[in-house]
Image 1 (cartoon, rainbow, N blue to C red):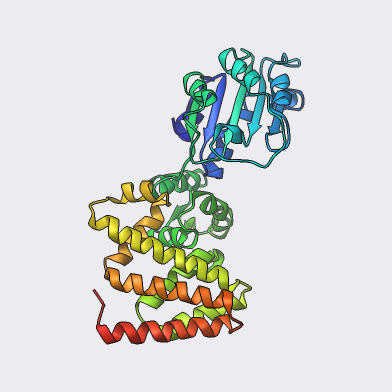
Image 2: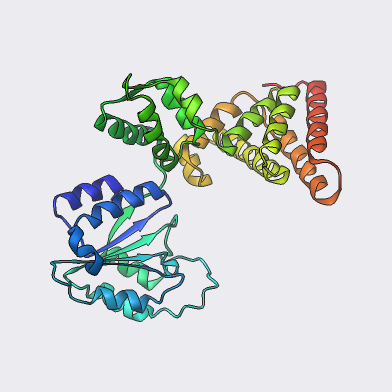
Amino acid sequence: MNAQQAIKAIKTGNLASIYVVLGTVDYLADQLKQQLLKVIPSEERTMNVGSYDMESTPVAVALDDAMSAPFFGERRLVFINHPYFLTGEHQKSKIDHDLEALQAYFDHPEPATILVLMAPYEKLDARKKLVKSLKKQATIVEVNQVSERETQAYVQQALQAKKITIEPAAFQELLNRTDGQLGSIMAQLPKLMIYAAQSQQIELAAVNALVTKSLTQNVFDLVNDVLRYQTQAAVSLYHELVAAQEAPLKINAILLGQFRLLLQVKILERAGYSQGSLASTLKVHPYRVKLAMQVVRQFNQETLRAAYLGLLQTEVQMKTTQRDPELLFELFMVQFVNERRAVGTRA
């Protein structure tokens, strides 16, 4: 079940005894959480809503709350946050969790309690007995990365409520500047809607003026400058990022990650992988895969590989020498451009 389906069911009073909110999109998880909170009248929430973090609180404390009768109300709502013991992750936490008691609760949940496990992970460990039990007893709500079409639907829904539209070019630029991340996009909408209060339309100029490019997007622009041999533009943007207090090693690491992704997409696309299967296989946001596919169709594998290896060598020099990182990047650009032009590698 996805978030929209779960929210619709909750609104109609179709409630489950146990929910697992699984995934990494905080915006969707929060939307679901807010809808569940509405089940409890506002005047009852102080006594009938509990929230417990498993990284600092024993699960037994949360279970005591879950098994208590509602205080002057019909239902109790209990959130168990960060249940890392349902995953394969190893935590250094010294908290002693009574997982047998949790298993017993899963088998016989309290009828008047809604227990919600907020699991901000990509997946649970299906080998564990607890997880197997959850899959039988609980309603699993996935809040994983959404497609560009789904993202647009969420944006349109929010804008329609305020009778505001958005230009296609403005929406595309909003995607670009937020890396296609739904949470980031929804966080930007309020100020864009205020800006568009009179015209009732969000235009490209508004997005350019109000939405700052993420570091990843700036680095993506840098990737394009590198591959198109735009030495002056690449060096200028690199200097701008350093001047904005971005660490050279961090910039180089993201650059390496981008070229690694381009190489992976190039190789797997040749093997017949579709955009959807690439995103799933590489565990990368679908929008990043879409952009990568647009880039790799213009350049051959050897060019991408040369850039990646050159940046890898630059990283080694940054870590092992006292040379100026900005100078090292300039030297990389000069060497890369000269070598690639010498062998003629544009696709």
